[in-house]
Length: 328
Image 1: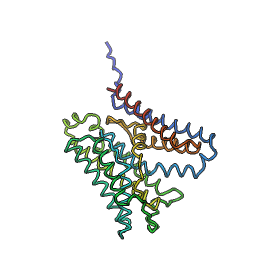
Image 2: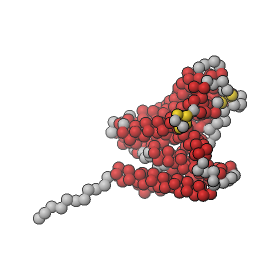
Image 3: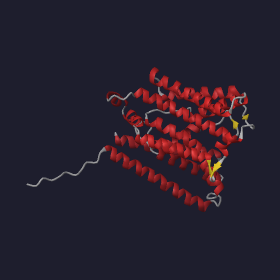
Image 4: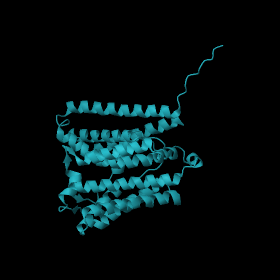
């Protein structure tokens, strides 16, 4: 009797990979539809100025989204990203006004943000507090430090040298430097998340921290590093914002955490950890940027814009909940 070879069983990773790719394809289709609709609804939507403004808007915030996505995959969350980004601007701005070279001031500001991330990582991994509580406290502390250091007033950095402003305002071959930096961050982070052993451990830690620990993964180290990385990328974003605007605003970034978390979750990052991609998160960022630009061009009230963005986040979280419920 001839033996019959049973059909190959599709593993969980293959099914999950297919679902993620399907989600990313769906986001691309939604963005394409929005582009088509808005090109008919407003003659200003597809103009170079508007496309450039949208790209500049999501490019720097996209760097923070990269950090948040990796942190979400590991099972954490950070509500302090807006405040820490503003604090990076303020630290670098105050140091520059005090006579420090802007490049050195920026490195110190980024290092300070990395220290904030390490501070949060310590309380999460050693003390045992939840990311939500720790980052909420740091959000308030960092914003208070911004206001304390500036007296609540923006710092005018009009004497920043042209070569420093170039990273926020310049262009290479007609492409803004901000967008080039953003693309480099995305490519590197996506490659590391998909290909390197260290970042694969992020998925295992977020999926099941106890099982990952039993398999030999130092899960606390993974959580500590991802928390530090997220804050460090906030520091990079803050420096770029400072170079772009030529100022340091202590109230900058209020509400950024909403956009960043929404973009990551819309792109497939789970609030329970263990899943997500950089490409999906960036597509989520682009989608939110297109929605914001569309609402502004259609002269929708800023109050309604907040309601719509909050509704998009609620929808994304609800979809994430039901996906994880079915997966479990």
